[in-house]
Length: 421
Ligand SMILES: CC(C)=CCC/C(C)=C/CC/C(C)=C/CC/C(C)=C/COP(=O)(O)OP(=O)(O)O
Image 1 (cartoon, rainbow, N blue to C red):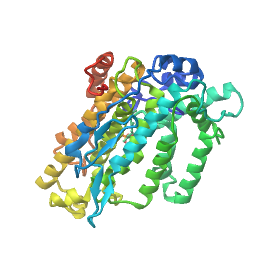
Image 2: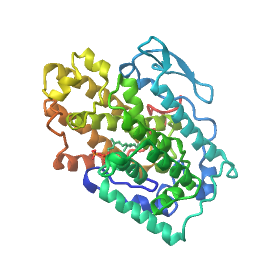
Image 3: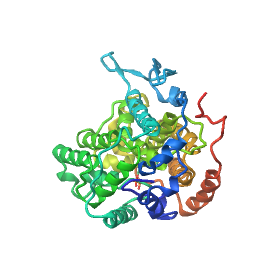
């Protein structure tokens, strides 16, 4: 994967410690040369591989119905095709209609996809990012990528970006109690510097280098910092719309950051925005799974990442969660939450085949493994108050070859669920 980043496939680096991927980023994305987003310093390649003719149509509808509250609205893609956005508006408690989080987030998805298109059609680096002046020489840069690999190996269980991990550490790490909104403002200013080619340290330098070479937009990074700000003051979510936004901020953003680096398979017929949408769905699915696995742990920190209105509909209150008793009401509530998370995984799965061949295996392996946590919550009879659901080593090991075999299948030429119509 990416950037100042890592590529550690799930459980404790059993598959890879990420250095292979880092190497490919460092060396100019050799491994991804055949992807739809070759790196910038392979500029001529981009031009040659660009598929002109407007990528159109998208597949957003399938996430719909069960995941939405209201069913309103049609919108338009950049190329004028209309699509249904079944939850573009949500009703506020006061009865006002507001644009749903999902609609807002989809604007970001469209922006990311448009950025890729602009990069690909640019004949002469029209939208060039500023030349990155990196500290020292190429040797130092290589060292910076190595350091990123070490950070990954130290912290990550799932693949993750080093910058994301550092951001997360601000609010979840040992100094978390000292983190203020002002500290996050400073972290965001430093982020702007990274994108403007003024890295502060070595890890930043690796990210600066990466974002200068791939069509990576700053917005998802800013949004992740926004998620951390949210975590500082918000400990309840009124409905799924609010929770969705939080999940986008802290995890969906990672999906959007990753696709430009991983690249889409050159033979893929899927629209760029549909692949970004699948990446977003994987982030959301992972985060929802994380939340469902950690209900007890979060409650002990006074946090409830569950939609309050759905809890109330199920006849449950905050006190029930703090009491931590598995009741039939809880089982029914949990079944619905798990069902929703699985739908996001299903949506994500459709996009994996469209990724560049080098990325399919690790992404699919992590998807299958993380989704299995939901099975384990069920196997624990929904006791996520005192039991931490996890996937056993033998199950993990069994999943890897399955994911590998499936990852060999190239994108379908016409019948892909994400193919343009
Ligand atoms: C599907 C397509 C088209 C692309 C894939 C795009 C990607 C890479 C999406 C992944 C997004 C992602 C990894 C989000 C992070 C979500 C999350 C909850 C991570 C938890 O990480 P850890 O904290 O290390 O996990 P544990 O808490 O389980 O240890």
